[in-house]
Length: 360
Image (cartoon, rainbow, N blue to C red; front, side):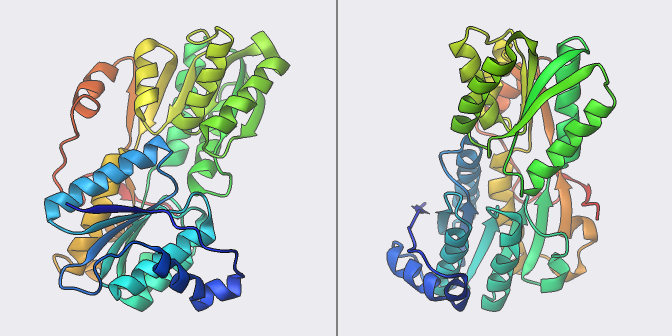
């Protein structure tokens, strides 16, 4: 099964030029050749960066589904550049003549609208995950905008906070590392932390810093926080595991790993390993392997007419997926079935992990 990862660099252009499609044309020339309009659609994954372990697993899931379905697959990476992400998608729409299925984690919340509009105009089918404006809905672009998938960030942020508080004995100071603050996941997880803090007055939030989902930024910030607060830091709340891993490296540099518990979200291998060793108290996974494959599966089944998006209930158009808590209690079983072995997923079970419609 062929799979291509594309990371082109578009030149600096104005938004007006971008929206007129010139950048998409340039990006098309820069990309490796892919199959143009054809009987079988091209499956396309659009994510932020393969240096992020979460998105690396997402790509693996996409490849697994593409191999299972016998379809061409292309991975686009924005490297955190919204204009590049949108331009690369438009370029793929031009290359395939719109005969494609896109599974997209938009770099930023506003990016979802131009992505969806371009797909609908070209006749492609699209599923978005995590980030979209509140006033953008799949039903507004029937049938091409098939579904939007999120995971309840408020619940995740609150759950990991509560476990952290319990681990440190219900009192003391903590520091928190937030994600890219304009994204839905970062906003919701921070709300969950705030809710947990409000219910636990003996826990003091010493500082909240934004590390933009990146371990490198978290490492630097954590070093500064340790200098400022020292032994007053009893625990660390991280909005994702990559930042939590950066914080862990900072703790290791000060011989504090395992003494100051960390919690995070994503279930990446580094975090799961840290739960096993006691350096993380817990993590929560949305299963990026499932996200990468199932986002394509839902879009592809809609495109070939296995179901009509227009006739699906609201909980199939905008829905929360199932998240799994990984703690000391279940980490060994999770490791055996999801790390040592490739996850087993029924790609025909499109709605099996739906937990409910997204609240509006």
